[in-house]
Length: 127
Image (cartoon, rainbow, N blue to C red; front, side):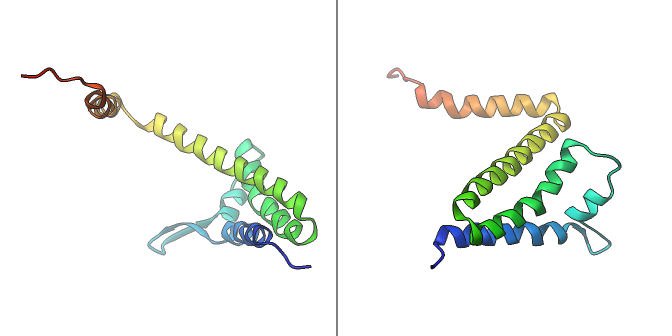
């Protein structure tokens, strides 16, 4: 039986998650490097972030294995892993943004949004 394109892509994405977990995530001019594995190993105890970090290689391995052995399960695992990692990453990015921005940036963003939206709905009078 020949593998479908979806099986192949999910399997490759799974392998990429496993490999990427062990490659550098941070590289400061070669002076300091840290992988996902390094970050997980540096923690003390377990938190939601640790569980998500561990889900990267475990979920990737499951995706790779199931894409070959049980494609219907691979679809579900791939969807769960993708939603979980992208969702958590989006949450952490938004959280960092909210924690590190000040009032000035919020005022600029609001004014930029007004500058973009108002002209689209502005009905100009003939001068």
